[in-house]
Length: 258
Length: 261
Image 1 (cartoon, rainbow over the protein chains, first blue to last red):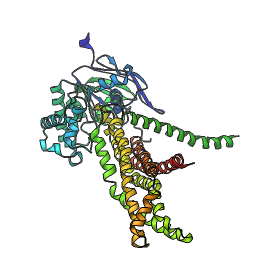
Image 2: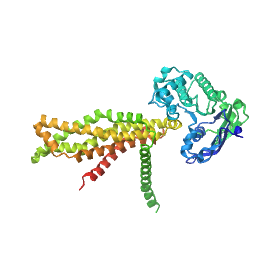
Image 3: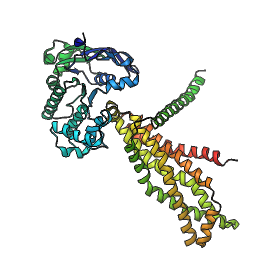
Image 4: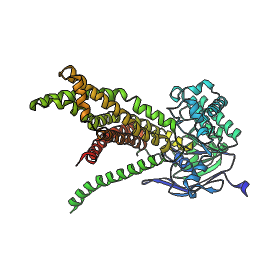
Protein backbone atom coordinates (compact mmCIF):
# COMPACT_ATOMS: atom_id res chain seq x y z
CA UNK A 1 0.00 0.00 0.00
CA UNK A 2 2.81 2.34 0.95
CA UNK A 3 4.44 1.63 -2.39
CA UNK A 4 1.55 3.19 -4.28
CA UNK A 5 1.39 6.23 -2.02
CA UNK A 6 2.27 9.34 -4.04
CA UNK A 7 5.17 11.38 -2.71
CA UNK A 8 3.15 14.58 -3.01
CA UNK A 9 -0.63 14.72 -3.09
CA UNK A 10 -2.57 17.98 -3.25
CA UNK A 11 -6.34 17.90 -2.80
CA UNK A 12 -8.78 20.78 -3.27
CA UNK A 13 -6.14 23.43 -2.65
CA UNK A 14 -7.60 26.93 -2.67
CA UNK A 15 -5.98 30.32 -2.21
CA UNK A 16 -7.44 33.76 -2.87
CA UNK A 17 -5.86 37.18 -2.68
CA UNK A 18 -8.76 39.54 -2.05
CA UNK A 19 -11.28 38.99 -4.84
CA UNK A 20 -8.83 37.05 -6.99
CA UNK A 21 -9.14 33.26 -6.65
CA UNK A 22 -5.67 32.15 -7.70
CA UNK A 23 -6.07 28.49 -6.74
CA UNK A 24 -9.60 27.15 -6.78
CA UNK A 25 -9.47 23.46 -5.90
CA UNK A 26 -6.16 22.19 -7.25
CA UNK A 27 -5.72 18.39 -7.30
CA UNK A 28 -2.28 17.04 -8.09
CA UNK A 29 -0.35 13.82 -7.47
CA UNK A 30 3.36 13.28 -7.95
CA UNK A 31 4.58 9.69 -7.58
CA UNK A 32 7.89 9.16 -5.75
CA UNK A 33 10.98 9.38 -7.88
CA UNK A 34 9.27 11.08 -10.83
CA UNK A 35 9.42 14.59 -12.25
CA UNK A 36 6.23 16.56 -12.71
CA UNK A 37 6.14 19.73 -14.79
CA UNK A 38 3.37 22.23 -14.13
CA UNK A 39 2.69 24.64 -16.98
CA UNK A 40 0.32 27.57 -17.13
CA UNK A 41 0.06 31.21 -18.12
CA UNK A 42 1.57 34.09 -16.19
CA UNK A 43 -0.42 34.71 -13.02
CA UNK A 44 -2.12 31.31 -13.20
CA UNK A 45 -0.91 30.45 -9.69
CA UNK A 46 1.98 28.07 -10.40
CA UNK A 47 4.33 29.80 -7.98
CA UNK A 48 1.54 30.14 -5.40
CA UNK A 49 0.99 26.38 -5.64
CA UNK A 50 4.57 25.47 -4.78
CA UNK A 51 4.81 28.22 -2.16
CA UNK A 52 1.73 26.70 -0.49
CA UNK A 53 3.40 23.28 -0.47
CA UNK A 54 6.59 24.82 0.93
CA UNK A 55 4.62 26.54 3.70
CA UNK A 56 5.57 30.02 2.49
CA UNK A 57 1.92 30.86 1.78
CA UNK A 58 -0.96 29.63 3.93
CA UNK A 59 -3.72 28.16 1.72
CA UNK A 60 -7.38 28.93 2.42
CA UNK A 61 -8.54 25.33 2.03
CA UNK A 62 -7.43 21.89 0.91
CA UNK A 63 -4.90 19.22 1.84
CA UNK A 64 -1.21 18.98 1.06
CA UNK A 65 0.23 15.54 1.75
CA UNK A 66 3.84 14.44 1.66
CA UNK A 67 4.23 10.68 2.06
CA UNK A 68 0.59 10.61 3.12
CA UNK A 69 1.03 13.14 5.95
CA UNK A 70 -1.19 16.22 5.72
CA UNK A 71 1.15 19.18 6.22
CA UNK A 72 -1.62 21.56 7.11
CA UNK A 73 -2.66 19.48 10.11
CA UNK A 74 0.87 19.47 11.59
CA UNK A 75 2.23 21.80 14.27
CA UNK A 76 4.49 24.54 12.85
CA UNK A 77 7.59 22.72 14.14
CA UNK A 78 6.67 19.37 12.55
CA UNK A 79 5.65 21.14 9.37
CA UNK A 80 9.02 22.85 9.18
CA UNK A 81 10.69 19.47 9.66
CA UNK A 82 8.69 18.09 6.72
CA UNK A 83 9.34 21.04 4.43
CA UNK A 84 13.05 20.88 5.31
CA UNK A 85 13.09 17.81 3.08
CA UNK A 86 12.29 20.02 0.09
CA UNK A 87 14.98 21.81 -1.90
CA UNK A 88 13.88 24.84 -3.89
CA UNK A 89 15.38 26.55 -6.92
CA UNK A 90 13.82 30.01 -7.11
CA UNK A 91 13.04 31.72 -10.39
CA UNK A 92 15.65 34.45 -10.01
CA UNK A 93 18.00 32.28 -7.98
CA UNK A 94 17.31 34.22 -4.75
CA UNK A 95 20.97 33.87 -3.78
CA UNK A 96 21.97 35.71 -0.61
CA UNK A 97 23.91 38.59 -2.11
CA UNK A 98 25.66 39.46 1.16
CA UNK A 99 27.28 36.01 1.32
CA UNK A 100 29.95 34.50 -0.92
CA UNK A 101 28.95 31.67 -3.24
CA UNK A 102 30.35 28.88 -1.03
CA UNK A 103 28.36 30.15 1.94
CA UNK A 104 25.21 30.27 -0.17
CA UNK A 105 25.73 26.64 -1.13
CA UNK A 106 26.71 25.59 2.38
CA UNK A 107 23.88 27.51 4.07
CA UNK A 108 21.51 24.54 4.28
CA UNK A 109 24.32 22.21 5.34
CA UNK A 110 25.10 24.43 8.32
CA UNK A 111 21.44 25.15 9.19
CA UNK A 112 19.96 21.68 8.62
CA UNK A 113 22.81 19.22 8.89
CA UNK A 114 24.65 21.23 11.55
CA UNK A 115 27.95 20.91 9.68
CA UNK A 116 30.79 23.07 10.92
CA UNK A 117 31.85 25.90 8.60
CA UNK A 118 35.07 24.18 7.53
CA UNK A 119 33.28 20.95 6.62
CA UNK A 120 30.39 22.76 4.96
CA UNK A 121 32.84 24.83 2.90
CA UNK A 122 34.62 21.72 1.64
CA UNK A 123 31.29 20.07 0.80
CA UNK A 124 30.13 23.23 -1.02
CA UNK A 125 33.28 23.06 -3.16
CA UNK A 126 32.50 19.44 -4.09
CA UNK A 127 28.89 20.29 -5.04
CA UNK A 128 30.01 23.26 -7.13
CA UNK A 129 32.42 20.92 -8.89
CA UNK A 130 29.61 18.47 -9.68
CA UNK A 131 27.79 21.32 -11.39
CA UNK A 132 30.81 22.27 -13.47
CA UNK A 133 31.90 25.29 -11.43
CA UNK A 134 35.51 25.81 -10.35
CA UNK A 135 36.26 25.90 -6.63
CA UNK A 136 37.44 29.51 -7.04
CA UNK A 137 33.83 30.51 -7.87
CA UNK A 138 33.05 29.81 -4.22
CA UNK A 139 34.97 32.92 -3.21
CA UNK A 140 32.95 35.23 -5.47
CA UNK A 141 29.75 37.02 -4.56
CA UNK A 142 26.52 36.32 -6.48
CA UNK A 143 26.57 39.76 -8.13
CA UNK A 144 29.88 38.82 -9.79
CA UNK A 145 28.35 35.83 -11.60
CA UNK A 146 26.57 35.54 -14.96
CA UNK A 147 22.90 34.51 -15.06
CA UNK A 148 23.77 30.92 -15.96
CA UNK A 149 26.33 30.64 -13.16
CA UNK A 150 23.85 32.09 -10.68
CA UNK A 151 21.34 29.42 -11.70
CA UNK A 152 23.96 26.71 -11.19
CA UNK A 153 24.85 28.08 -7.77
CA UNK A 154 21.16 28.25 -6.86
CA UNK A 155 20.81 24.64 -8.00
CA UNK A 156 23.85 23.70 -5.92
CA UNK A 157 22.24 25.35 -2.88
CA UNK A 158 18.95 23.53 -3.53
CA UNK A 159 20.56 20.08 -3.69
CA UNK A 160 23.29 20.58 -1.07
CA UNK A 161 21.34 19.06 1.82
CA UNK A 162 20.28 16.09 -0.41
CA UNK A 163 16.54 16.76 -0.22
CA UNK A 164 14.13 14.01 -1.25
CA UNK A 165 11.86 16.53 -3.01
CA UNK A 166 13.06 19.27 -5.36
CA UNK A 167 11.04 22.22 -6.64
CA UNK A 168 12.15 24.27 -9.62
CA UNK A 169 10.47 27.60 -10.32
CA UNK A 170 11.07 28.47 -13.98
CA UNK A 171 14.63 27.12 -13.99
CA UNK A 172 15.48 28.32 -17.51
CA UNK A 173 13.86 31.77 -17.46
CA UNK A 174 16.25 34.48 -18.61
CA UNK A 175 18.81 32.05 -20.02
CA UNK A 176 19.78 31.53 -23.64
CA UNK A 177 18.59 28.20 -25.17
CA UNK A 178 21.99 26.53 -24.84
CA UNK A 179 22.42 27.51 -21.21
CA UNK A 180 18.78 26.49 -20.64
CA UNK A 181 19.57 23.03 -21.97
CA UNK A 182 22.69 22.87 -19.79
CA UNK A 183 20.67 23.74 -16.67
CA UNK A 184 18.01 21.17 -17.62
CA UNK A 185 20.73 18.54 -18.01
CA UNK A 186 22.14 19.40 -14.58
CA UNK A 187 18.65 19.25 -13.05
CA UNK A 188 18.09 15.80 -14.57
CA UNK A 189 21.48 14.61 -13.28
CA UNK A 190 20.77 15.90 -9.78
CA UNK A 191 17.28 14.44 -9.61
CA UNK A 192 18.57 11.07 -10.84
CA UNK A 193 21.61 11.05 -8.53
CA UNK A 194 19.59 11.99 -5.44
CA UNK A 195 16.61 9.83 -6.40
CA UNK A 196 14.43 12.83 -5.62
CA UNK A 197 10.87 13.59 -6.59
CA UNK A 198 10.78 16.80 -8.60
CA UNK A 199 8.17 19.42 -9.40
CA UNK A 200 9.08 22.10 -11.94
CA UNK A 201 6.99 25.00 -13.13
CA UNK A 202 7.91 26.50 -16.45
CA UNK A 203 6.79 28.33 -19.56
CA UNK A 204 9.55 26.76 -21.58
CA UNK A 205 8.11 23.80 -23.56
CA UNK A 206 11.51 22.42 -24.56
CA UNK A 207 12.57 22.49 -20.90
CA UNK A 208 9.26 20.93 -19.79
CA UNK A 209 9.76 17.99 -22.12
CA UNK A 210 13.40 17.57 -21.17
CA UNK A 211 12.96 17.46 -17.41
CA UNK A 212 9.41 16.17 -16.96
CA UNK A 213 8.12 12.59 -16.80
CA UNK A 214 4.59 13.92 -16.42
CA UNK A 215 3.02 17.32 -16.98
CA UNK A 216 -0.05 19.18 -15.76
CA UNK A 217 -1.59 22.45 -16.84
CA UNK A 218 -2.92 24.97 -14.34
CA UNK A 219 -5.62 27.28 -15.64
CA UNK A 220 -8.42 29.16 -13.91
CA UNK A 221 -7.14 28.00 -10.53
CA UNK A 222 -7.46 24.27 -11.38
CA UNK A 223 -5.49 21.52 -13.06
CA UNK A 224 -7.21 21.28 -16.44
CA UNK A 225 -5.02 18.59 -17.98
CA UNK A 226 -2.39 16.10 -16.93
CA UNK A 227 -0.51 13.47 -18.86
CA UNK A 228 2.95 12.41 -20.01
CA UNK A 229 5.31 15.33 -20.60
CA UNK A 230 6.21 13.81 -23.97
CA UNK A 231 2.63 14.35 -25.18
CA UNK A 232 2.49 18.04 -24.23
CA UNK A 233 2.58 19.23 -27.84
CA UNK A 234 -0.18 16.88 -28.98
CA UNK A 235 -2.34 16.63 -25.87
CA UNK A 236 -5.65 17.04 -27.67
CA UNK A 237 -6.74 19.51 -25.01
CA UNK A 238 -7.56 22.88 -26.60
CA UNK A 239 -6.25 24.84 -23.59
CA UNK A 240 -2.95 22.96 -23.57
CA UNK A 241 -2.66 23.13 -27.36
CA UNK A 242 -3.14 26.88 -27.43
CA UNK A 243 -0.62 27.36 -24.62
CA UNK A 244 2.07 25.00 -25.87
CA UNK A 245 1.85 26.31 -29.45
CA UNK A 246 1.64 29.93 -28.31
CA UNK A 247 -1.52 30.75 -30.31
CA UNK A 248 -3.26 34.06 -29.79
CA UNK A 249 -6.65 32.60 -30.70
CA UNK A 250 -8.23 29.92 -28.58
CA UNK A 251 -10.12 29.26 -25.38
CA UNK A 252 -7.56 31.10 -23.21
CA UNK A 253 -8.28 34.80 -23.08
CA UNK A 254 -5.37 36.84 -21.77
CA UNK A 255 -6.28 39.54 -19.28
CA UNK A 256 -4.71 42.66 -20.72
CA UNK A 257 -6.00 44.87 -17.94
CA UNK A 258 -5.19 44.45 -14.28
CA UNK B 1 -26.52 62.05 7.42
CA UNK B 2 -24.45 60.57 4.60
CA UNK B 3 -22.01 63.45 4.89
CA UNK B 4 -21.59 62.79 8.61
CA UNK B 5 -20.98 59.10 7.92
CA UNK B 6 -18.38 59.99 5.28
CA UNK B 7 -16.61 62.36 7.67
CA UNK B 8 -16.59 59.76 10.45
CA UNK B 9 -15.38 57.08 8.02
CA UNK B 10 -12.65 59.45 6.85
CA UNK B 11 -11.48 59.83 10.45
CA UNK B 12 -12.00 56.21 11.42
CA UNK B 13 -10.15 54.62 8.52
CA UNK B 14 -6.72 56.15 9.24
CA UNK B 15 -7.19 55.66 13.00
CA UNK B 16 -7.88 51.97 12.43
CA UNK B 17 -4.94 51.85 10.05
CA UNK B 18 -2.62 53.30 12.69
CA UNK B 19 -3.96 50.85 15.32
CA UNK B 20 -3.46 47.94 12.90
CA UNK B 21 0.11 48.98 12.10
CA UNK B 22 0.91 49.57 15.78
CA UNK B 23 -0.40 46.11 16.62
CA UNK B 24 1.57 44.46 13.84
CA UNK B 25 4.70 46.37 14.84
CA UNK B 26 4.30 45.31 18.49
CA UNK B 27 3.90 41.65 17.49
CA UNK B 28 6.89 41.93 15.16
CA UNK B 29 9.01 43.43 17.97
CA UNK B 30 7.93 40.76 20.46
CA UNK B 31 8.66 37.97 18.03
CA UNK B 32 12.06 39.46 17.22
CA UNK B 33 12.94 39.82 20.91
CA UNK B 34 11.69 36.32 21.72
CA UNK B 35 14.29 34.91 19.32
CA UNK B 36 17.02 36.46 21.48
CA UNK B 37 16.02 34.03 24.23
CA UNK B 38 15.71 30.87 22.11
CA UNK B 39 18.59 29.05 20.40
CA UNK B 40 20.08 28.78 17.86
CA UNK B 41 21.81 32.16 18.11
CA UNK B 42 23.42 33.76 15.09
CA UNK B 43 26.48 35.33 16.76
CA UNK B 44 28.15 36.00 13.43
CA UNK B 45 25.14 37.99 12.24
CA UNK B 46 25.10 39.89 15.53
CA UNK B 47 28.80 40.72 15.15
CA UNK B 48 28.32 41.96 11.60
CA UNK B 49 25.33 44.10 12.59
CA UNK B 50 27.26 45.53 15.57
CA UNK B 51 30.23 46.47 13.39
CA UNK B 52 27.93 48.06 10.80
CA UNK B 53 25.96 49.99 13.39
CA UNK B 54 28.68 50.99 15.85
CA UNK B 55 32.02 51.04 14.06
CA UNK B 56 30.94 52.42 10.70
CA UNK B 57 28.67 55.03 12.30
CA UNK B 58 31.53 56.33 14.40
CA UNK B 59 32.77 59.07 12.01
CA UNK B 60 29.37 60.63 11.42
CA UNK B 61 28.42 60.50 15.11
CA UNK B 62 31.82 61.86 16.16
CA UNK B 63 31.65 64.81 13.77
CA UNK B 64 28.08 65.60 14.77
CA UNK B 65 28.96 65.48 18.47
CA UNK B 66 32.09 67.60 18.28
CA UNK B 67 30.45 70.37 16.25
CA UNK B 68 27.36 70.28 18.45
CA UNK B 69 29.54 70.70 21.55
CA UNK B 70 31.35 73.64 19.93
CA UNK B 71 28.14 75.39 18.88
CA UNK B 72 26.57 74.72 22.27
CA UNK B 73 29.50 76.41 24.05
CA UNK B 74 29.33 79.43 21.75
CA UNK B 75 25.55 79.81 21.98
CA UNK B 76 25.36 79.38 25.74
CA UNK B 77 28.27 81.78 26.24
CA UNK B 78 26.64 84.56 24.19
CA UNK B 79 23.24 83.88 25.79
CA UNK B 80 24.51 83.70 29.38
CA UNK B 81 26.66 86.81 28.88
CA UNK B 82 23.41 88.84 28.96
CA UNK B 83 23.03 88.08 32.66
CA UNK B 84 26.68 87.48 33.56
CA UNK B 85 26.35 83.70 33.92
CA UNK B 86 29.15 82.66 31.55
CA UNK B 87 30.55 80.39 34.25
CA UNK B 88 27.70 77.95 33.65
CA UNK B 89 28.82 77.20 30.10
CA UNK B 90 30.77 74.06 31.02
CA UNK B 91 27.87 72.62 33.02
CA UNK B 92 25.36 73.42 30.30
CA UNK B 93 27.52 71.76 27.67
CA UNK B 94 28.08 68.57 29.63
CA UNK B 95 24.51 68.23 30.88
CA UNK B 96 23.05 68.96 27.44
CA UNK B 97 25.34 66.47 25.76
CA UNK B 98 24.93 63.60 28.20
CA UNK B 99 21.22 63.95 28.87
CA UNK B 100 19.86 65.02 25.50
CA UNK B 101 22.03 65.90 22.56
CA UNK B 102 24.37 62.91 22.68
CA UNK B 103 21.67 60.23 22.53
CA UNK B 104 19.22 62.17 20.32
CA UNK B 105 21.72 63.33 17.71
CA UNK B 106 23.53 59.99 17.62
CA UNK B 107 20.14 58.31 17.29
CA UNK B 108 19.05 60.53 14.42
CA UNK B 109 22.37 60.11 12.61
CA UNK B 110 22.29 56.33 12.97
CA UNK B 111 18.62 56.26 11.95
CA UNK B 112 19.56 58.01 8.71
CA UNK B 113 22.53 55.78 8.05
CA UNK B 114 21.77 52.33 9.44
CA UNK B 115 17.96 52.42 9.54
CA UNK B 116 17.84 53.19 5.83
CA UNK B 117 20.46 50.57 4.96
CA UNK B 118 18.69 47.92 7.04
CA UNK B 119 15.32 48.61 5.41
CA UNK B 120 16.89 48.60 1.94
CA UNK B 121 18.78 45.35 2.54
CA UNK B 122 15.90 43.41 4.08
CA UNK B 123 13.41 44.96 1.63
CA UNK B 124 15.54 43.84 -1.31
CA UNK B 125 15.78 40.37 0.22
CA UNK B 126 11.98 40.34 0.49
CA UNK B 127 11.28 41.34 -3.10
CA UNK B 128 13.94 39.00 -4.54
CA UNK B 129 12.65 35.93 -2.62
CA UNK B 130 15.77 35.73 -0.46
CA UNK B 131 13.63 35.72 2.69
CA UNK B 132 11.56 32.84 1.30
CA UNK B 133 14.82 31.10 0.43
CA UNK B 134 15.91 31.37 4.07
CA UNK B 135 12.71 29.63 5.13
CA UNK B 136 13.30 26.80 2.65
CA UNK B 137 16.76 26.33 4.18
CA UNK B 138 15.34 25.70 7.66
CA UNK B 139 16.27 29.17 8.88
CA UNK B 140 13.74 31.41 10.55
CA UNK B 141 14.15 34.85 8.89
CA UNK B 142 13.12 36.60 12.11
CA UNK B 143 15.87 34.80 14.00
CA UNK B 144 18.48 35.28 11.29
CA UNK B 145 17.74 38.79 10.04
CA UNK B 146 15.83 40.62 12.75
CA UNK B 147 16.90 39.38 16.20
CA UNK B 148 20.67 40.02 15.73
CA UNK B 149 19.97 43.54 14.47
CA UNK B 150 17.68 44.36 17.39
CA UNK B 151 20.36 43.26 19.85
CA UNK B 152 23.05 45.13 17.90
CA UNK B 153 20.93 48.29 18.07
CA UNK B 154 20.53 47.99 21.84
CA UNK B 155 24.29 47.51 22.31
CA UNK B 156 25.70 49.81 19.62
CA UNK B 157 23.92 53.08 20.39
CA UNK B 158 25.11 53.35 24.02
CA UNK B 159 28.67 52.73 22.79
CA UNK B 160 28.31 55.51 20.24
CA UNK B 161 26.75 57.83 22.81
CA UNK B 162 29.70 57.40 25.18
CA UNK B 163 31.94 58.59 22.32
CA UNK B 164 29.49 61.37 21.41
CA UNK B 165 29.37 62.60 25.03
CA UNK B 166 33.14 62.72 25.32
CA UNK B 167 33.63 64.44 21.95
CA UNK B 168 30.78 66.89 22.57
CA UNK B 169 32.33 67.97 25.86
CA UNK B 170 35.70 68.12 24.14
CA UNK B 171 34.25 70.37 21.41
CA UNK B 172 32.86 72.72 24.03
CA UNK B 173 36.21 72.67 25.85
CA UNK B 174 38.14 73.58 22.68
CA UNK B 175 35.90 76.54 21.83
CA UNK B 176 35.69 77.75 25.43
CA UNK B 177 39.42 77.63 26.08
CA UNK B 178 40.65 78.68 22.62
CA UNK B 179 38.28 81.51 21.78
CA UNK B 180 36.13 82.36 24.81
CA UNK B 181 39.00 82.81 27.25
CA UNK B 182 38.17 80.04 29.77
CA UNK B 183 40.93 78.58 31.89
CA UNK B 184 41.23 74.88 30.90
CA UNK B 185 41.52 73.59 34.47
CA UNK B 186 38.59 75.65 35.71
CA UNK B 187 36.49 74.62 32.70
CA UNK B 188 37.15 70.93 33.34
CA UNK B 189 36.47 71.37 37.05
CA UNK B 190 33.13 73.02 36.26
CA UNK B 191 32.33 70.26 33.80
CA UNK B 192 32.57 67.50 36.38
CA UNK B 193 31.36 69.36 39.47
CA UNK B 194 27.69 69.29 38.57
CA UNK B 195 27.69 66.09 36.53
CA UNK B 196 25.88 63.21 38.23
CA UNK B 197 25.84 59.51 37.40
CA UNK B 198 22.16 59.74 36.50
CA UNK B 199 22.91 62.33 33.80
CA UNK B 200 25.14 59.88 31.96
CA UNK B 201 23.10 56.76 32.79
CA UNK B 202 19.84 58.29 31.57
CA UNK B 203 21.51 59.17 28.26
CA UNK B 204 22.81 55.64 27.87
CA UNK B 205 19.40 54.11 28.64
CA UNK B 206 17.85 56.47 26.11
CA UNK B 207 20.49 55.38 23.61
CA UNK B 208 19.66 51.69 24.11
CA UNK B 209 15.97 52.43 23.52
CA UNK B 210 16.75 54.53 20.43
CA UNK B 211 19.04 51.82 19.06
CA UNK B 212 16.26 49.27 19.47
CA UNK B 213 13.78 51.60 17.73
CA UNK B 214 16.14 52.24 14.80
CA UNK B 215 16.77 48.54 14.25
CA UNK B 216 13.10 47.71 14.72
CA UNK B 217 11.84 50.27 12.21
CA UNK B 218 14.51 49.32 9.66
CA UNK B 219 13.73 45.62 9.99
CA UNK B 220 9.94 46.05 10.11
CA UNK B 221 9.71 48.32 7.09
CA UNK B 222 12.10 46.18 5.07
CA UNK B 223 10.44 42.93 6.09
CA UNK B 224 6.96 44.13 5.15
CA UNK B 225 7.96 45.89 1.93
CA UNK B 226 6.18 44.91 -1.27
CA UNK B 227 6.29 45.75 -4.94
CA UNK B 228 9.85 45.80 -6.21
CA UNK B 229 12.22 48.76 -6.27
CA UNK B 230 9.49 51.28 -5.49
CA UNK B 231 8.40 49.28 -2.46
CA UNK B 232 11.96 49.13 -1.18
CA UNK B 233 12.27 52.90 -1.68
CA UNK B 234 9.13 53.50 0.35
CA UNK B 235 10.34 51.13 3.05
CA UNK B 236 13.65 52.97 3.30
CA UNK B 237 11.98 56.37 3.64
CA UNK B 238 9.44 55.03 6.13
CA UNK B 239 12.19 53.43 8.22
CA UNK B 240 14.11 56.71 8.60
CA UNK B 241 11.06 58.93 9.14
CA UNK B 242 9.36 56.61 11.62
CA UNK B 243 12.55 55.93 13.57
CA UNK B 244 13.31 59.68 13.78
CA UNK B 245 9.82 60.52 15.03
CA UNK B 246 9.86 57.66 17.53
CA UNK B 247 13.27 58.78 18.82
CA UNK B 248 11.94 62.28 19.52
CA UNK B 249 8.72 60.97 21.05
CA UNK B 250 10.48 58.43 23.27
CA UNK B 251 13.04 61.09 24.23
CA UNK B 252 10.23 63.11 25.77
CA UNK B 253 8.70 60.07 27.47
CA UNK B 254 12.02 58.93 28.93
CA UNK B 255 13.02 62.44 30.03
CA UNK B 256 9.67 62.73 31.80
CA UNK B 257 10.30 59.37 33.42
CA UNK B 258 13.84 60.17 34.60
CA UNK B 259 13.73 63.82 35.55
CA UNK B 260 10.14 64.99 36.13
CA UNK B 261 9.64 65.77 39.80
